[in-house]
Length: 215
Length: 215
DNA sequence: GCTCGATGTATCGAACCGATACATCAGGAC
DNA sequence: GTCCTGATGTATCGGTTCGATACATCGAGC
Image 1 (cartoon, helix red, strand yellow):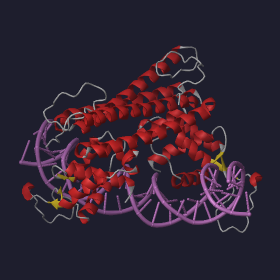
Image 2 (cartoon, rainbow over the protein chains, first blue to last red; image 1 turned 180 degrees about the horizontal axis):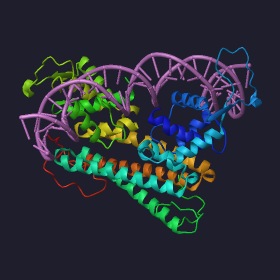
Image 3 (cartoon, each protein chain N blue to C red; image 1 turned 60 degrees about the horizontal axis):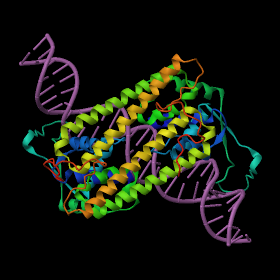
Image 4 (cartoon, rainbow over the protein chains, first blue to last red; image 1 turned 135 degrees about the horizontal axis):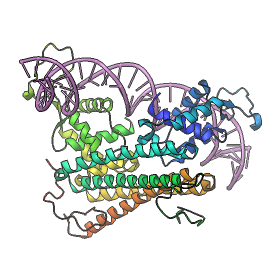
């Protein structure tokens, strides 16, 4: 099925979990849900949607509400199609959500899984966070050994690029560590309490625009 | 030609600029040169190399030094092929290096351009850095408006993901700002001085190979 | 009532990836 | 010695994914 499409499938199921959406809106949300570097194109989205309908995970609703008028048009407008999760789709979502394994913490997949952590159980969350941390640690080791092997042969700009890349991964690890501690804390704490993933900061005071940027 | 292949072409030309390499080594260097998320596969590298040979940017050397023995093997081992830049290749490299424009500061391209800044002139460097900064600023605005539009509808994890993504881009912008100031300083300073891209750190102590490319 | 940009579904050729095949060679195990 | 394994090395193929485009409606503004 392709690794990327797998991530897309989870994203679609998750986004349709609470309310039906049509393709255009779905794409916007999938691509903005996470600051994803790579955006999915329609050429990927629509075939995937069709495949999921075929597998009975989704159903199509064509709301005649907005003046369908299937007139003598050659093609084009077919009326917006709202996709809705079937019971099988919900099962599939739960399955993908809970399924941990290398695929869950690869670069392409981790973001989607994390976005739907709210619907996963604490155990799954922890396994994926730990797995992701290990993955980043590998990357870090790789980076460092490459740096120490070739440090003398690099010019200032290449070196700076390496340094910056390494720093980014290090920050990512730190972020994960904070998330993991927060999860652990919430396990000890009374159940139902939010884990306050706020990266180790004090429980977010309601400033009204947490993390907002003053433009 | 495809956007990704364009970045690969520049990377190949840059890496072969100082010394010939064979495919396997080339791939390793391209993929580690920058902590690139996405690695190029052989399925991309070899066809690209062949195309570049066809365009006369590269020439193949099959060093008989390592026991070629073109015996009755059906296929497989053909002896390692070292690729070397032709004069046209060097021209092409200079052309791609100097060419500024949207393509130079997209996510996929910026890293490669930056890695070879040491071989570009100060003017080109500055244009690309500024262009990249604008690109990131767009991303930032997009991020922020998405956040403010949907803040109330997001659960804690999705929100945290957004916050973290935003923060990463902000740090990227800060990095660029530091690089840009360093460039400006080096323009005012005596020519030939290195711009010390060390992100605001004290001027890099002379490592003995200032601006030189190893090897 | 006109254009223009956003919304919307859909497809196609080209680009690209991932896995694999095939082959040599160094090193250690035995 | 020789067998095995993992690193080095070139190359291709099937299938996935992208980027561009076609086509169509609708609201806003002039």
